[in-house]
Figure 1: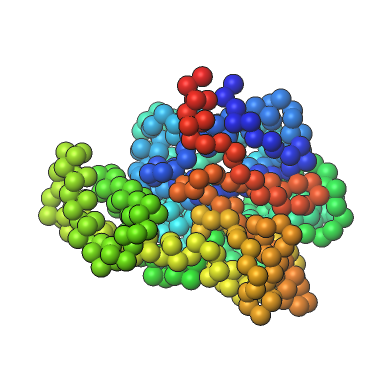
Figure 2 (figure 1 turned 135 degrees about the vertical axis):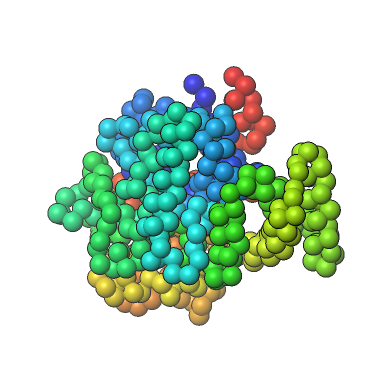
Length: 406
């Protein structure tokens, strides 16, 4: 049994994570494959009797950087999908997804188009897997959504209730696409409403960069996806994350440098590009440069937190007393800051959370972190007493490689 040795809390009722970016360079897919193996082992061994849900908050499938076919074909991907299928088929357990900006288009009024785009994504996966002779049953509309509410049972029972919504309006009108009672007792009588979502909604530059994300999502050419992945997650990350001394120089020269790196990548892979491909590549280079700068700008989460502070009151005023927001997207767990927004937001005792005081309501904000471009992947456990506890996977890549070889 391949096991990461993660110490899951026996009182956890749900595990929450995001931003695995399966199919993209520097995704810790091997970590995640072993993470699922560890989770399944403990579930089957009945070490986690209260755990009833795995919730993935978006950008799991990186459809900007890879194709439907590739995501269903390669070894580690297939292993992950097989384990998803096992979880989905387990009695009294729920596999749930909220979708992110690397999975569906967000051009224009994305709320109006969300259900259509979601259904199209699932249809594309199912069409492709049928061609390949696969039969993963978890590619179904009613476990994918935009928003997830983790709340008390509406009938007054002590079990938590998970409700899925496709749009913001659906949350406000209680028009859920699905609901799951978690068959486990909670240890708190407090009224808790947790809103879970990917977090692209809180991105200050959503309108600008949705155009870039859409470009990648609609690009049907696997070759260009590979090139884009190499430029954005390979070369650009190397420049910005590993060579800070070059930062100000590359701000002036980056377009030319990226083009040269692209040519090297293309030549090394023996790829053939026609005039249309070259024109598309020029557009990709410019947008990827801007997008990576944007990624650096939102890493500290401040812009997202400001948007969340404005976003939540509409739900509270509509009788949905949300007291915790859990999101991903930024690839960075929240870092404690001394002051934000005239003291309306304060670091909580848990260093990866913020407390927002908007009288008459208060709520916490937590971020799931990521499984790409991070030293250690992270996830969140929701315990039976409603505590939200961030965790990290306590292994280095070399240690994971040794486990894989066993």
